[in-house]
Length: 605
Ligand code: ADP
Ligand code: MG
Image 1 (cartoon, rainbow, N blue to C red):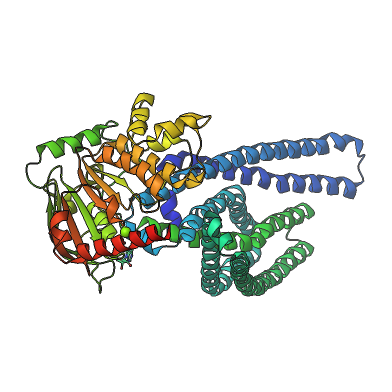
Image 2: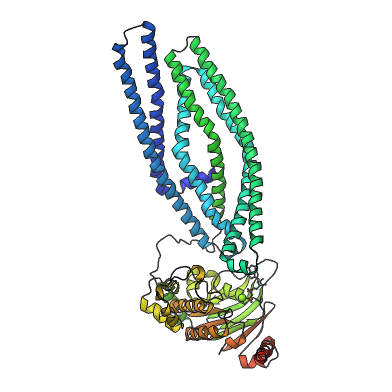
């Protein structure tokens, strides 16, 4: 329950709406409570006429006033219910917006390591499930349960005025109900968690399969994917069956107990009327009131059911919100404190002001797991304008090195400085604005080519975008599309070839125009011809920039100043290519290996 309270207290903007909902609930309760009194009054009037055998015509007008009073109360009730319902709906969706945006904001500030370990399916389902269950509960609480609870309370008070044994008996309902509910709650929640986890896994796999449908099809794994998906759902059926059986058993017990209590309540009303404690009108009033209280009490099962879901959902929600962000004090929703383009200007200013090395690894060590270091005691300085290539076997830690530079992870030991500033103490947005990156998979977004190139610079003009594309060797093919720069490229750029995607990625980095460039296997996924096209763009991009290049094929490294080879997470050799080629180290080995490989290829041709 505390997590629900936390949600309410942390959404200050909605407090007036919450208040309006409470007020409308009170009015709904009041207007519906008036009705039994009117009917009771009418009953007494009718009974007195019937008893005395008076001429009915003189009483019709009086009785009609009761009917009119009923109509007025009814109409008022209808109007307020609908106004309250409207406010409830709008408040729920506004709450949903706030919670969803907060959740997304939190996710965006979480460190890379969070995404390494958390299932994507779970991250996505949390957005829909947890948040919708919480807001749905609050909405139905406001629209249905709150008026009902108020009614029940009012009935208790009114019945106490008429008959204290009656009130006492009604009062017993609550502890009995609560006791039986707490008995069931824990087990229910555990099963709910299990079920949701199965849904998350199935949903995550579903998204993956749809996203990589090509792989699934070409490996002929449709049947297996479908079967394992269905099996996940089969286990949710089993869990739900257990949960539901349990729930309905307990609900049966709960309601059975209530039925017995209400038997006592009706008995008291009938007997006390016969004994002359109440008039017929009083009896009619009390029966109506008890019936009004009965409904919410029976509905309490649903309230509890949806309340438990909401509590579980909101707890899980806050579990994410309480995660540690990668840096404290990040406020993404607050107004940006820098004008567009200012961060990159600041990066260039930092680059210009820096007199020492651009990048310094200083006895830096890092591992993803505490017990295994991927990079060990790395010491290396990269100077301004230098082109440095990193070479080493796959899994040797080259990408990890890049991730450290981008502040996706922090070194465990030693230091890493960019423009003389320790990365551990540099604001991450500043650190990241120092770099332009081209990854192996172009990693584009759905949308137009223009949007993708301008990703880091949404305010760029067409001329700027076009100039970047031209230098990236992309302008020609882009203009061949009927829609040119406004061509939509499909999810992750599905409608483009590898070489086209990569040239757009190069244009994107070109437009960002950061002082340091990182190419992580930027051409590794390409065939030789498109590689050449992309390489021309990359050469443009590297012009005048400090560049770190990771390339699989040594032939594509091009003219670099120095090569760094990594072996078992350590730096093995550092030096100009010509020197390393003859030193008999890894680089020389790889050179020989690839040379013989390409000779073999040539012979085959
Ligand atoms: P390279 O880019 O040189 O091929 P990487 O830096 O990607 O190598 O990987 C270095 C080592 O770190 C590998 O053994 C890999 O399994 C491990 N590794 C990479 N990323 C992660 C991660 N997110 N979590 C755990 N281990 C990782
Ligand atoms: Mg890599």
